[in-house]
Image 1 (cartoon, rainbow, N blue to C red):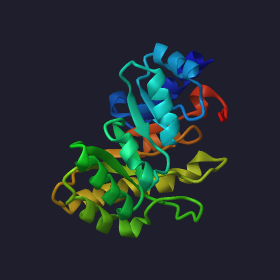
Image 2 (cartoon, one colour):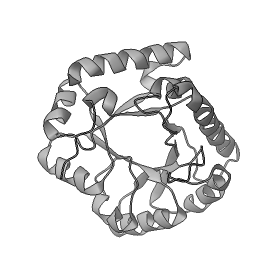
Image 3 (cartoon, rainbow, N blue to C red):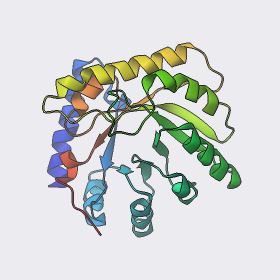
Image 4 (cartoon, rainbow, N blue to C red):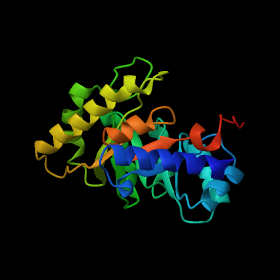
Amino acid sequence: MVKENLITVEEKIRKACERSGRDRDDVTLIAVSKTKPVEMIREAMNSHIVTFGENKVQELLEKQEQISEPLDWHLIGHLQRNKVRQIVGRVKRIHSVDSLRLAKQIQTDFEKQGELAHILIEVNMAKEESKFGLMPEETEDVIREIAGFSNIRIHGLMTIAPFVENSEENRIHFRNLNKLLVDINRKNIDNVNMDELSMGMTGDYEVAIEEGATYVRVGTGIFGDRIYIS
């Protein structure tokens, strides 16, 4: 199932890139493996997938203990400050930096171990009360603060769009996140040169690609419905 699903997802990514005049290599597929067993991750690995996304620190660490092969692990879920020290040196990107307080904790814990944290700033583009993330209008000020942290590198922005039946409804949020990234880059803030946009999930990643996504986070489209593990 995983192999067949990946063929379908890859074809959709390729066509979305064609429609928007983009190179397929500009988009990284993150296989969202949260709640999925290691056996399914290995199925994806057999199809040459090396980039995986996890929501919870504990689950990420448990899977890393079972998989020795070098993979690009991305933390895409909400990160609690008391869990930061556990992921130092263990993830390629933290997608969900949603506050200055969290960034300060990342700086502290990564500095202690002499590591660099590579992060994306999570923005609540739709301003949903149930979602984490900075408001669009406060994002630049927070980025200016974080830019001075010696052990953090900001690579771009991330958003989780609303759950909708029609993916076209989320196009405005993806487009606005892209505009926000361009606007902030134009300010020429010291130590800030962002080029990554993490946006789009199983239901809307094609639209996200058309609007500039460089990371798409696809779970159900690859692995099927969630499997909850205790």
